[in-house]
Image (cartoon, rainbow, N blue to C red):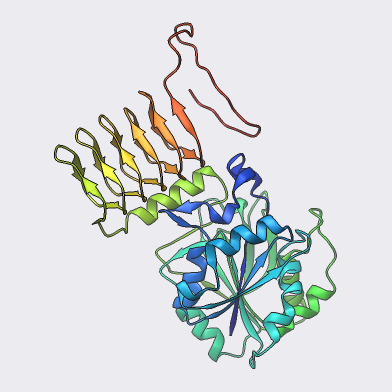
Length: 364
């Protein structure tokens, strides 16, 4: 069986961060988001994986730099270009040759590159490998089903898929992990673009159901599932992942610095005397946590970042930034190469000086 991971999409809900970084490369617990689906497939026994990438040289390069040939994960990776952002079913269509070649059982798993499942999917993969079904659809009971595609179930079977319904028939959202055999290509060939001008995978699955194919569903009982499509989702997934870190120290903690709880400190990083870090927290390579800095729980700090005279909590700092201000920063997603500093003494009292790009969000 083969795997297919998607890394396309514009990530519009995460702008301005995604103006300069692919959404799937935003770090969660200091690791690119797309690494988690690859590890999920590997842990389920899938080691031949295709990665759908955009058609521009820049997009392909940044994904390849983050993943390489797959050997760091113990898998083999093949990159497949999608010439237009034509939807999930379109991605499957352009990957058909990869998915069907050297694949005797003609089965594969489609895993969205921005979906993270804690607890794994191995038992569902084994069920599909050993069963006679044409597709397995994974569902999760969620409190806000209208944000997702929802499966309408009758007499124990899926009868209809509804994309982001205003009034959901139930709380069973489609998890971004799908299992198919080669029968999925017939309905894909007959699809017409949706109102988004995309070929929707939900329409293709509906085609399987309508033609009498065996489509089985499982309500997954994993620890958690996240689809971090916006800032709130990124911060929540980061927080959950940090809860599971194993403390380590590859850097330098000066005498007089305070470390509390589960904290990971990477190579070349210095935690200065007079600073404090309270876990769970991760600090990347070659960082400086200066005097009077406080790093609070559920914060991850990327490489080459300097933080001094600042308080940061429940945030993701992507890296290569300098933060030096007396403001308390919480629940924030801060991009690469950002400088946050004290306002000039020449400004009027209560005033702020900002340089803010389009699609930004500022709360002061």
